[in-house]
Image 1 (cartoon, helix red, strand yellow):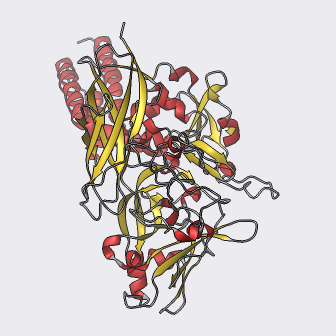
Image 2 (cartoon, helix red, strand yellow):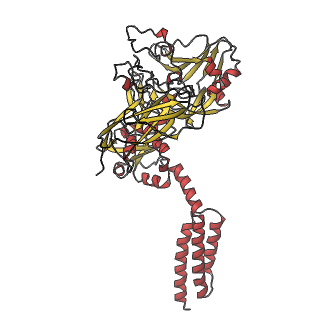
Image 3 (spheres, helix red, strand yellow):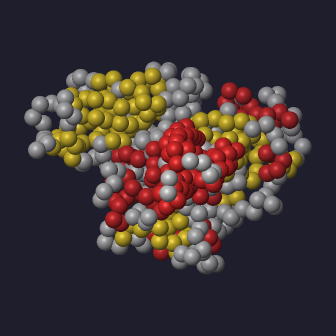
Length: 560
């Protein structure tokens, strides 16, 4: 064979092998090094022309087969790397503050979102996204809690697409949520996610959209409802201490390191504010309190130290003279009065009561709004007793003397008004009654029936005291006929320790020809408690314990 032809074949082989080897460079290990050596030997081999052709075909197949064999592992490695690197700060990009990002929360102003340290302008993307209504809830804030709910988004293709919209980095100083204004006691409050819907700003109180709430059994910390009575304290973890004192024990102080050295336990539990659904009760007659909707509840995995273990180590048993466990937080008002509350001692000492001193929520440290660094989680009991920013535990013969134990969070007869109310005559709320809510569709929403002419409904149900929800009934004809909902997620715990909520869904036949329907829902728990039919007979001046049938009126539209 002439030298020119031989050289041409070598050049072709060299180029081909170079391309194939480039594909294999991303594969680590001895296999790639061995292939490189084979390729190099082949190219430099001074054999006849048929040998070149033989190697050209054989090694090409070898490279392709090896590449396909290793591709699956390679893809897994790339996935892991992209999960770790997505959203990292890029030094060459500009820096934006959270307040700047928050201004871009509409199509008119542009739609910006945050992922980890990255800032992204996704204005062009939103209209193309099948879940555009949900991603708009993240506009001006972080997409991370939404990706916890909709885990399908956490894949390399999405990360790659997201990076195309990268415009900058998040200001690391503002991630801490620090604002300089010493005159305003709320100036150092953390920055919240824009998906939350505030009822008040000072103190900050907010709930998530109901339809977002029931898309996940576990509620992300960022969109878990926030109930604050006072400014959010800033706590130095290094100097933080928990004090325990009272009847029958010697005073003891614990650092966070001390507490984390004790056995760690986790529970899945819902926490609900006593005023959940208050806005519905206020339609009967005005009440005093925040106009909460149906989403002042959330379900999370809480981790920390069992209170019963800690008290047992200090010698506190059922034989001590105390009857109550008082809790004090680090949040205080201008007079210096701290938020406080208490629970019965028997609840705290019962291992089956599962009371936790929690320092983690969904596997992450508590955020400031949710009690960093330590809070009480009293499962099955009203949210007001789950004291955040915990600083003191006191074993006492008396309930907490705090305003929120003595003069708030109590239920009364519908005929009691502010001229006749006597808070000393009513017990403080502990366990909450059974409740349910329709979260999708929303009131006044235009809905389309399924192909089989049925209406899809989703919601949650929960009962206090560890009682499990056993049934949810749904109707669209004012109770003439009922449909039993299916449970989409409930957790595995049984009655007496069933602390988490139940998510449910139902397909209901709408009355033929109807332009609108009112959907009703009611839940039944494992003690066969059920919800009252209306708010009229459970109205109370503080608007608490609002657990009547949930009613949502929607408009039915015909598909064109």
